[in-house]
Image 1 (spheres, helix red, strand yellow):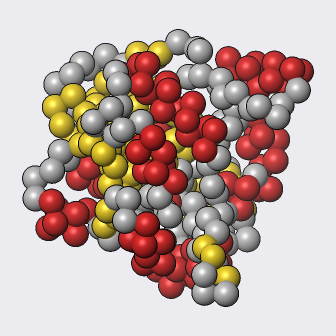
Image 2 (tube, rainbow, N blue to C red):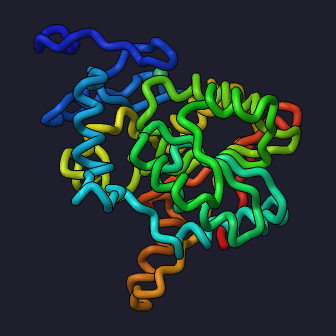
Length: 289
Ligand SMILES: [Zn+2]
């Protein structure tokens, strides 16, 4: 029986226009999935409007405490970012001297760490309070938008552009990817991390999975749909960076369990890298560890 018989709206995939199927009710919206087996993009429908989104961001991400301390809701610990940098360093060459852009840099944790690798980081962050934190430190520049970066820096090119837990927040991520792609140096790479909606946790918790529950998330990516969105942004040579993050506080059984999840693609995060079409057209996977 079609969704229309249940009083459901007819919803089409925002990426490929194929019919979408209702998956899951959430307090703030519904989760829909594209029926096209080559796409299977999972998205929030309807998306929150600008006013609702701003309210959600203010409450969740940048609560101002005593006008001084800003706490980011989802803060990737430095020890994880360090392992990611090591992986990039060993997969694509040394980070030293490289121009790095962190799109959606928050209060600048990734850029600050890039300085430890003698890279040259810059950030883009729409939130003014987060940008203020960065400008006080005077370690690197953070710009409000792609436009303001280009006004200040002209035709600057980057060796790495990071979208770290950011792509799931964008209304039409292929638009930003397409703009960012044009800011890559010839051998530059985009590096993306996003929650894995095909993870064991997501499948088990459903609507209670923190990434469905988070009202600022507009997409819920699995490997196939993330690849499709990267392609729609004109990117190529798409590689899944598969590796096991070492958690120093995990017991050996817990570490073994985590390695098993990674081996079956059921762990919590997707880490992908993509480059310009001229580099190579064949997707490949970099092996574990
Ligand atoms: Zn689709």
